[in-house]
Length: 344
Image (cartoon, rainbow, N blue to C red; front, side):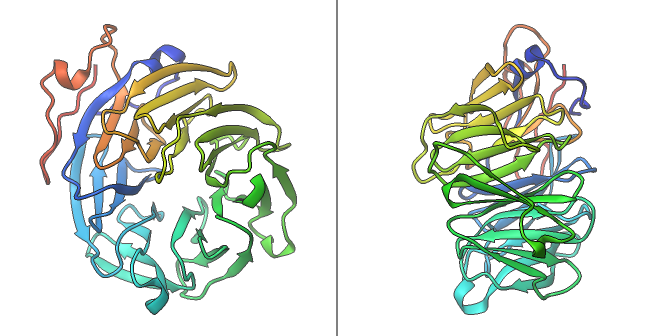
């Protein structure tokens, strides 16, 4: 089993090591998401598969394939077997840019039509059935799981990135020129109540996340700069530049306590920073090339990183820097089986 989340410090973060590898994907993993309350992770990948994992035991639970629409961005709904998944194929013909999928019986429960180009940002409200999507068609759309029709549209310049805060009361939209606009999720039609500018960086923001306490925002740009902003005043708390990854966007993640930020880089390394001290506390080889997907589990001392393989990382408490998979004879997980997963 993975260890439950305890208070993190520099040494614990520095000790993170690969504990499980799933390498049977037929292409790059496009996105991944953790369930907020259950020990589950879902991936969407270039081989048109959606895969559900038990993260407590590092076990692949189920795989479904979606050849007609593909599987690009994905996020959990509140139900542990249901997801919102964006389409890769036939967007202009069908308009079926988003689907509400049930893994339990492998059904599409609802289609959401509207976006004419690829969805690049997707997030579910933590408090109700609302969700948001940002597309290369320069729009952000707000939806409700219970109805087909779009509930609201924001037109903007450039590539949008969207995120709800952890209370679901505020959402952020990042757009061209480093502008971050904050909206009241109950009255977004009145326009943003605040706008922040990330000065000096003209690259587009490709990912945005709020810390669990709502005090910070984490931005990742298309040229692999990472910024931590004060979520109330917009001041830049710290920023880090990483090696470019042409053609691949990277993802950064907060730890659940908001004290650390992690990100991959174009050089195939991953980095962790202590936000308060503004210093790097760890640098690891990803062992999987450029990790385009990276998220820390909400309730575990664990993070997942993915490229064309999926890796689970947990603290290595042996104190000798050894890899727990190598030391304990861990092997890659075969499809449908349990991978080797160790705690120390």
